[in-house]
Image: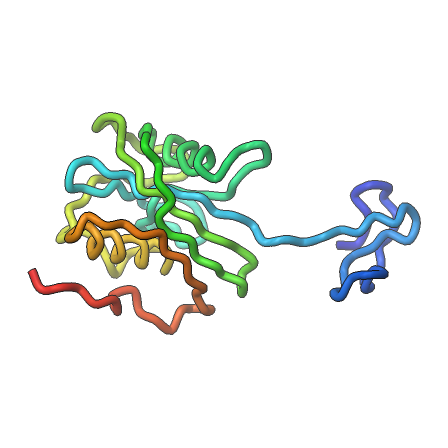
Length: 190
């Protein structure tokens, strides 16, 4: 940041009085410009025994599979953001959203939140940010082609939890280029 978004004056990198971290501060209007993590909200859309995935049409990770999700907008809840992103990316409407996974990614200044949700009907289509949208049974999930570790962890938790029909909210930090492989969770014998 070079200029204040409030008055246009050049900013300084300094620790404001009473603070403990350096921030961009405008010496003219005294605005402190805080930089905070961004929230990515998404859905685990379910239709019967299947999960809806989207093949990304945009970077990062273009061409790989993901759960529908994206950055939360101002003036919406996380749940609204997750439903909106599902509609935008997969043209699918969801209901009964329940918080399921929350991943802290401090190395990229993001928090990823996924909600389990039921699709209203089996109608879905390719949205602007998707190359392809498809329902998958567990055995069909393209594990090596998943775009993000948070998506892989959410899917693995879901298939494990589905065996017992217990879906606890899971919250965990993920390290850069997570040292934990996506397929590392213990899968029960079937």
